[in-house]
Image 1 (cartoon, rainbow, N blue to C red):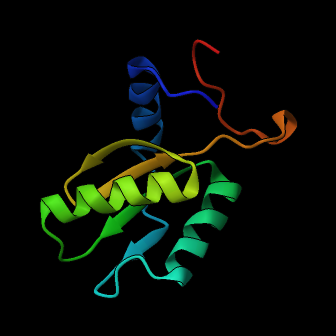
Image 2: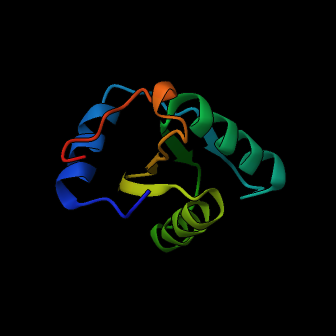
Length: 102
């Protein structure tokens, strides 16, 4: 999947508005079990929210970049302590979200 355009990110943020965070990242940070949960959640839902507990803004930004790289997911945005991530399913028949402009 190519890099998302601005209007696609905006669309995904609007779709994520009603979602609850499916992954919580606490004091242990990005341990292997958390990364596995993120990977599974992206496979199941394509669009997820991740909540970061008790982290500074800069640390959250670094963690979001790391998640994006390790999971091959697009970081769509951050609101407070919640990050929004998207990874389109490899198989077209299993995709739940159709991006505008595709």
